[in-house]
Structure formats: C-alpha cells, structure tokens
Image (cartoon, rainbow, N blue to C red; front, side):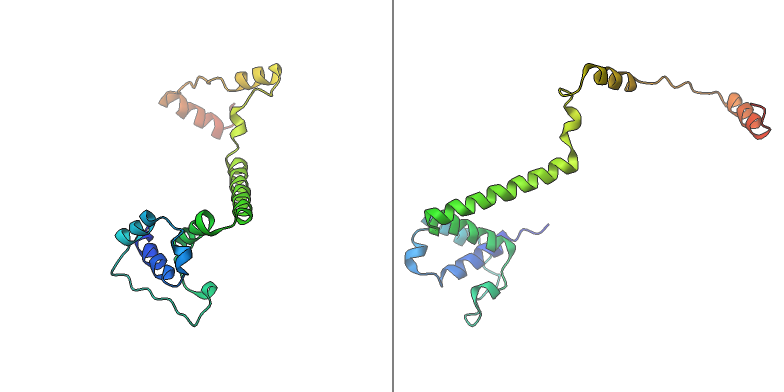
Length: 149
C-alpha cells in the first residue's frame, strides 16, 4: 500500500494558499509546519482556479485532512455537533456490520438455559478416533465391494 500522506500534505499546503488568511491563522502553526516538513517537494500539484473546488482532483488523504481541519478549526459549534453526530452514526453502522459479519455472540452463553449448555458441552466433547490398521481397511474394502457387511 502506497503512503500518499507526503503528497497529501503538499496538496493541503497548496490549497491553503487560496484560503483567506484569517482562516489559515485558525490552524495551529505546528500543524502547518508539520505539513511543510513532511510534504513531498517533488510532487507537482497545482490548483485549477477555473474549476470549482468540488471538481478538483484530490487524493483521499487530502480530503480527510481538510475535513479534519474544517471540523476542528473552521466549523461553527452547530456544524461541529452535526459532523460529530454523523461520524458517530457511521462508526456505529460499521460496528454493526462487523457484529453481523463476525457474530461475537457465539462466545456468549450467559443467555442459554442449563439444558442447552449441557447439550452443547456434551456435543462438543472430543471423539476418540480409532485408527484402523492397514489390513483391517483392506478387509473392510472387500466386504463393501462384495456386500458382505
């Protein structure tokens, strides 16, 4: 899997050049310094000012970084609350899908009755496998062929 974060940092720095200074000033300088230090300087990225922002071709990592910046530094309290509620909903949906897919309830036997527990434990006992000797398998094979069972 390719690490696109250095390229994403470059894209974020380029995008921030087109954002009003008062909005950029809300982002901690340490974060911007980190982006500058870790960005891929060889990656060539430019913003097409003739296209709206939604039509710009951006890495998924860039979109995630910008979404976090918006949520943490630019969003109003109402917007932040709605974003966090949406993130909680998405997280719960993913957890429910995992729960359905992997079914962790198979390990929970608290809800079972004693009879079911005893039945399960008796069905799960190891079975002793008697290994037949080679000669016995040959005899069994011929009995089966000649219907001598």
